[in-house]
Length: 613
Image 1: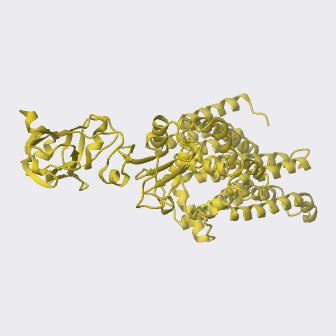
Image 2: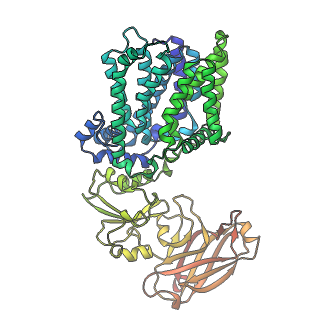
Image 3: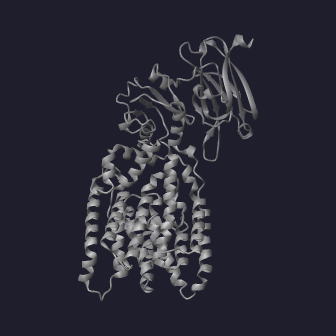
């Protein structure tokens, strides 16, 4: 099928719109899914991984995508941009393939563009656009749409389904299954296409089966073997979310949830209304004797079933099922305008424009890469630890990864190309904990998450460093300023710290700082800001405590900038270790949510009394 010049220009416009919505995906860092997927890919022997793409009985997790992950990692290193660009180009290619599919089945270019325009992008598919971790769905779409398009073209061509073409369709089915478990839908859909479009009541069944039966028998066997393979794949077996629960009620509930997502929750579907919608779609196809509408319903039902029988998944799993909805809508448009073919472009344009406006209005704000834990970890460690000894042992006291996730382990092993790298977490799952929680020695580095950055503890006495927050890169003194990078080392608790460059921080009602000072007569001083809504709305006092002993109680009546100086008796200062100073606001101000606040601290410190003189 050759596209006209106008069709090519229109398709280029669609691609431009698609690019406008999705181009940021090429700039994203690795996600948690990328860490897991790449780790799985590197755990398999290269030759075994390569064989598993076509040897569909081997229990390897999604081998086509795994080969791509492994290839980019081995050749180009631990860099997300090349993989992201490839994945985005795959999405853009799928747009073109989707149009060829719609055009092949619907025949009319205008109806095909309506189908494409109503399914071009969706705010629901953010994981698809922003993370290479959804490469399996992109590949599933790629092989499925190619297989269905070729089947439709070859089935009606002069040469028909030659043996070579049948072999190609079998190969596409294997690649679809090797891309994602849902890939078993392709041979099923080819069967539905054959029955819906080419089976006739007056046709002898035996000759029809003799011609089509062998290929579909091979596909059926491959499908059964692939289903058995999936059941033996370790990565799927250990994931509770992939546990299949065959139930019509569950299936309808899941379909209702996905319909609600597609409608951006402007319409909330129930199992009953979802069933009514599907029955109405099929009923209209029967009423109009429209095979395309029926096939659209079949595509949606078959491809959504694998994800409608497991735990609810993010909306990107509708990427392939939406292809069926697009076909149904394109066919419905063709039926509605069949008596006015000249006016189809005039009717199609506002429909497509309305869809684009809908997508735009519901499009979320671009994801900030700095909000992704994998990016923050990789960015900091690449700068501060360009190399690590082979098999190094790292301990993370706290981190910003989910407790049960292994992302931080996979991330660091992949970053340093070292599968022997040992990463233990005190805040992780039990399997990631140190062998002996009472003995935390022997680690090359001990980190904690502090103000958005990973800080390294002093390893002289790890337990004491963790308990007292003694950092390796800081020597405590007598003065703390939020404007200095080392300010977090002086904070014991109660400061709403972050990696912001702002030289001030809100405190909680009780904030504690520490200083290194010899026990001698001294003076505590601090500079802080008090908003008028804190100072003027109630009687509040600021208590100053040194090692738990109150040395002053000051009224908080002055709004704006405050500077205080409080005598500190030598007896309250620690002879060993650090001296802790508390700034506790009594009767603190609370916001509408009930969260309590103290003051906005700029700096604090302790001076010897003789130094003041």
